[in-house]
Each structure stands twice: as C-alpha cells, then as structure tokens.
Amino acid sequence: MNNLSRRSLVFGGLTFLGSGCTSVGTQTSVMANNTQFAVDPRYKRTRVKYDGTAPVGTIVVNTSERFLYAIEDGGWAMRYGVGIGEEGRTVKGKAIIGRKANWPAWTPTVSMMQRKPRLLKYAGGVPGGPNNPLGARALYLYRDGKDTMLRLHGTNEPWTIGTAVSSGCIRLTNEDIIDLYERTNVGTEVLVL
Image (cartoon, rainbow, N blue to C red; front, side, top):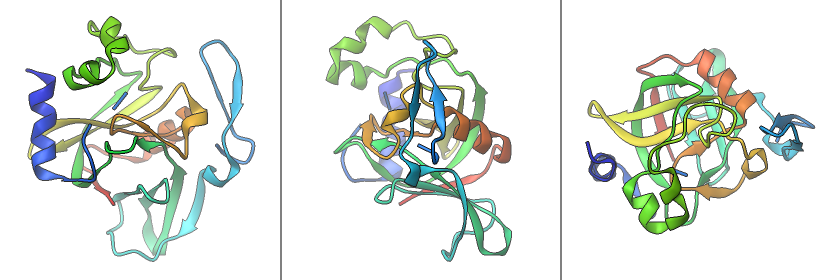
C-alpha cells in the first residue's frame, strides 16, 4: 500500500496544525557510537499529579508543553519529555495504539522523501537497531483500523527531546519509550492536544 495514501487517512480524521515522522536530570541516552548526551532536566521522566479529564490508561500528548502523560489511577500520571513534529507537521486528535514493535524497521514515506530528498537513500528502509531513527521501540498510531504512519517512538538523537523536529511523530528517549512500551497495551487510546 502506498505510504502517502495511508498517511492521508489519518489526516482526514485528525485536526491539522500543519502538514507532515523522520533529557532526565542527567539522564543520558546512548548513541550507536557510544557517545552520551544529556537530556534537558525539565524533560526527566517523572510521576506527577494529573488533573485532566482523560480516563486512566489513556496517553495524552500535550504538544505545546512537549510532554506525554500516561494516565494512572488516583489522579497521577507518568510524564515523559517528547520531541514533536516540526512547524507545520504537528497533528492533533485521537488514535489508538494499533501495534507495538521492538527495534522497529523504518522506511520514509513518499511525502517525506519529496520534502527531504536526502532521505531517498533510505527508500528501501532501515532495519531495526541502534542506527534506526525509530529507536528502541515504537507504538503505532491507528485510526479506524488503519495505520496513520505516525508513531510514538524512541530516538537515537536524544538532544531533540523538547524540540519540534520530526515529520509528525512523537519521539521519546530510548529509555523512556522502553518504559512506556512496557506499560502500554495495544488498543490504548492516545489523545494529541
């Protein structure tokens, strides 16, 4: 199936802010070449009080705050710092986790390669592993039973947490996506604000 047409399915159901997927105290994330980078301390994974209306078990991504909240019992949430879509590539709306992957493979979409021709060299895909842009884990966002081509995923670029840099996906440090992956079931509702 054409990646561009799959992506357009979600955009019909999500409200656009634009159009377009390519850190903790002193938490670090290890790069493939073993270089470590500290993530801004404000994006440290932290259990926080949650006073929103989302039901327990929901994942809420607040793009303006650059935080993802995994809603827990008793008015609490696990809060993670995230990187979001670059200007014009952030989407809002509801989806569900339709699939989970450990060290997922990645292939840029047709529209990504059109916008960024440097990605053409990856048209055949990148296998899962430390050099893959999706990082250690991915949670695939679905709408109406269809893959939106958007993901909650890890990153091998931890310094991008807290920034607007992706082509629409939500990225977490590899350590944080592993934690979220373990607490998240297929079918979990995701709300992107």
